[in-house]
Length: 485
Image 1 (tube, rainbow, N blue to C red):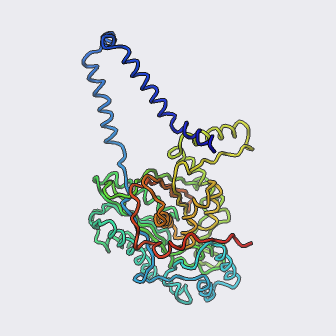
Image 2: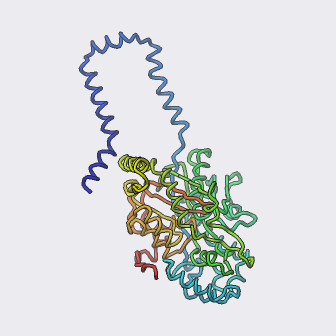
Image 3: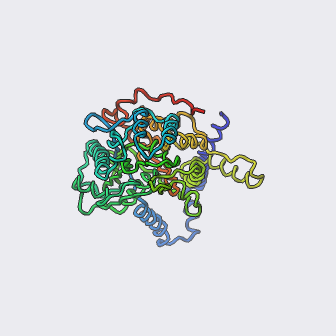
């Protein structure tokens, strides 16, 4: 370990050492010349006044153009996650109640109920996850109406936006762009229109409503908001809203691959405010990296697929190959983001490993970069226990590095694209965030997509009195037993 630390220190500071050596040598050489010799040398070059002017003007002009054309820095002012409370009634459904309600769905047979019961025991979910109001009634599917779906969306998102505006003090008419993602609920008027109408946002607001892009769409939304802010006036604000509406997506058939979402997905949502002004900002957006593997791979394209079963019941089919596809997508994303974030020492080891595999054959194990050298915190999409296990194994992560993901899955379930923000809130609620810390968010979505966003902490949060973890953080982390055999 000591040799590795010495190696990292040398490689990570190699360029700085070389630059300092060259600068020192040049300075010493100039001093040794003396004033007379320096003037004589300049005369021998026969420099004209125009040459001297260009020598100063061209670099200055180039620097000015670079500063004008480079992308503006984008900051996260703050974010707010939805959480249930006494004034936000939402059903916390224990597993036993969920199973009992499922038994009263006439189209779901006893074999499927037993399967779902076993799956819940192994899922990593706790007893306090929230489901929409329709799940408080029997039979559940009869209450999964359009009106109830709208009511769920409004409760979750209006609560999150209200909290965000209260935390930041930003007026609604100061928001210049709005990007929302919700994969499986897309009514008319759109969900973006509902927010614009509720908060009386500006008539010229630039807005996008993303649907069908899966659990990684929240990071896509952050990237689109960043792009909007490049063309809006400096200091403008963009509102990013991420959620998944559960009510209209209750599957009532017996296909096992389509019963999984019923067991894993839970209510959640987040509102985040981005800006090009660093005033009061808490994080800086460093990188957004998107990779799509479904272009030439039908297996990846169809591994998360909305379809009808043999009885005509609509649901989301999660393929058995999902973990394999997720691993391949992660590898593609790592290849893109690695050069942007990894120190020189890790990049060199990765290149040497790649060359060795090409020369000596595939029996040489590929080198897995140590991402703890690039990030202090990791937020891995809490899509399910298998997803977290796969990423921990693939990236050689410690239990502490995936703690936020596992605890978020246990407390809130799979809240789709918003789960990453609950994980960030967990890290902050534990008091682990420090100024300068780097955070890696990794999300997976249908298509198949693996997306990454990197943040740098500017100002850690003050102790929250009304956040998603306020009433439960003292109980976490909890022990989650190994999978039952």
